Image 1 (spheres, rainbow, N blue to C red):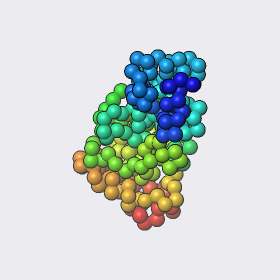
Image 2: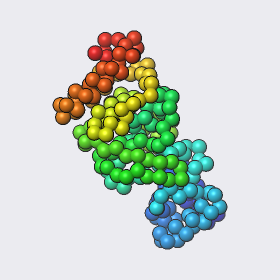
Image 3: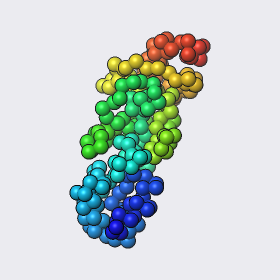
Length: 217
């Protein structure tokens, strides 16, 4: 086992199945060209997969998923979190499995096609960049809470372009906090947009009235 392989198996995989060339080079005490060469060799052997330039993964690792790539797609802070239909599916609120991974960030960037999945990015104002936490099953990416994931979906459906205008059937999980979602709505500073999001929420809440009770109003 060469130096790069030892670093991957002993140091990196216990932390995350996704890692950068720069991290491998630093931990192995070698230059970037050597690390890139050795990683490319491991890729030809089917051990690692190149996600994008300078970013690699071990897809056979039990903690790997396309979502685990998300934190590594950002070098700046804040980065981004999984939300919208992707988060709604992971929370069991919709049955439809999105064909892409939806990521919310404070800066717009083009969609990214990789061997493990396609990533779409949605820019949100910094004041609304919150309401996420580590994914409980693996902890290797941030995901919007059920309330924030639904708010984000309604928010972008009401904005120009209305990407999520036609939504699949949404079920609200036990413990869903309608007041929590409404607090997010109140933070939308542009009044016409805030009203539009509120109206979309009210229509959705009608179908979940028995679950939500009076808190949906």
